Length: 92
Image 1 (tube, rainbow, N blue to C red):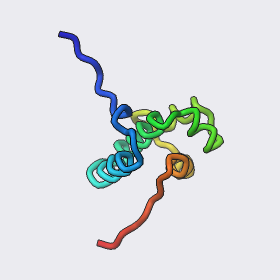
Image 2 (image 1 turned 135 degrees about the horizontal axis):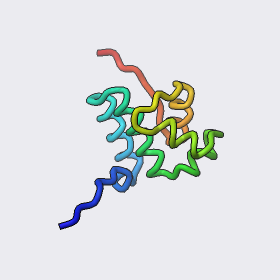
Image 3 (image 1 turned 60 degrees about the vertical axis):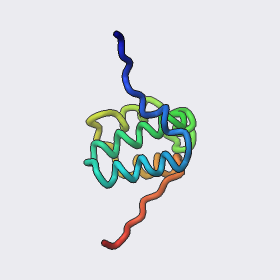
Image 4 (image 1 turned 180 degrees about the vertical axis):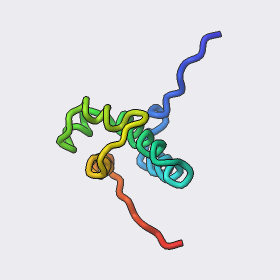
């Protein structure tokens, strides 16, 4: 029996699903998980579209959002805005 790699991007098909996914990773993951999750969302939306909206090249986006990458905060904010997200702080 042959298996295929699980593709998170396939399930990120609505703004609600994207928001839930990112919020879950923010709550339960580490910084590397968050970067990877943002990359999954960017791929689901379309890396070309994200590149156009951020002014960054596709190769630099793939590199910045790859496993183990340490992108600048400015890059993360540009990508979040391009995918329609924002960061908010809530008091505990």
